[in-house]
Length: 613
Image 1: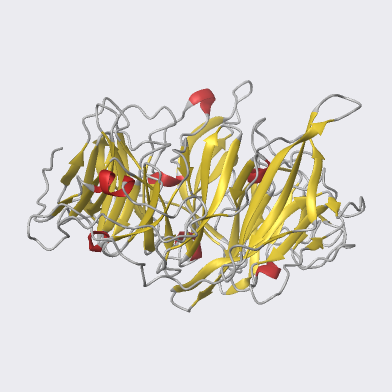
Image 2: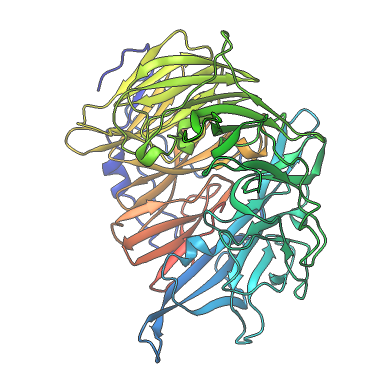
């Protein structure tokens, strides 16, 4: 372990592994309160290396809504084809009575889509309170949108359905949304976009059906309402957006073909506006606001979003533009992928982002001429400032980090080690930016100055990893692996002024405070962070990880992996425990109560929390 930043107080919890394994009681049901013996010396500056055991954590988001998870399992072979079939159902857990489950009557049976249905069939719809300055409070999942092909055995109900998280309803009652079929419906994939309505999830919707025919369904549609036939000639969805000045109005960007395009691989970039009226013709042609957002004569080879919408509703895009040289026999010329800023006003605005010398930010091409884009974990937002680095899926080679504000870009730092496309992080908090640059945690001020190296791993590669893509009061949470393969869970102040290292443990996820300053698309203020060590599951306060931890419970056996799905408000959360590649179990926890770990459903197969729970 090496620090080159200044750290006046480091909490080394060398005794935690032994202390946690010594904890009794609890078991997989969490019915008994486990004895917490981790208070070895405490954190009082007196030389002790232990972390105080707590009876529970406070300061959470106080979300008492229903929690949802799916259960998918093999149900036998198709007697005609011999193909393996699967059954997937959605379960609701009420935090007020976590021992009693409700299974929804709308489910998917005799499907050939496999154990991954828990990921592909269920999607969260969010709500939040957003004030005029973009301040977000009460961010949470309001409804779950899902696919089904049965209604208690009734063949006539299929396609889309949604169900509320409102715990005041005695029994959660799902409702069918539109008359779309099971085979036609989709909530995930390259040809599908979900637009969120943070004021009212009933105004959310889904656009789907590419590459053959684009359709749209509004969450207010009834069971017999037909989907809209959306814009013709659409080849790709780009991003769903909220309109400026009207939070209840939505838009989305698409690439479209057209008869007057001159480049063989060129498209138009077009904004569409969904209608709340059902029926095939409701939004077919009237949804096109501007025929082409790009300045003439440019055409689009590809367009992708970079990050989410900011608090001013602007959205950054990476667009590979084409120019026709108008010379016989000469193909269209790619200008390369560059950064653009889209503002969804009543009259939409698209502007190229330039530096102080009025030069565009050109991003590199990757494999097969496809532009390299950062993964979500390599993008950070602080107010209306966007930070990102582009390293590619190979996770090798140095890269530059960029700062973008308004229509201006600059280099935050040059030629840093790879951020880790699948494993690393880039986070912004307390006026600073931090990244996993190779095997080193590096921090800068918001303009790229005052560079500090805070931590490092001696592993050969990928020694730093996190599933906690958020922060609180400058605290970052990541896992550090050493050359011998040992994992340490590290909490580090973004300026290097404080840290906590927990040996033989890993952070597995976190809960949100439900608040944020950026926009509903960028809520990352943490409340609690979850820890896996051996068979034990614990949690600490994100604002003060050194204050102690609450032992939530002890699993019956050593798991293969423990995961959480998305950041969500607590104190009630769901955790997925993997026993092998074909079996996982969902556990319920309450960070206010020591020993609250409880197996939600005792059944073999693939159980998975819906993202956002």
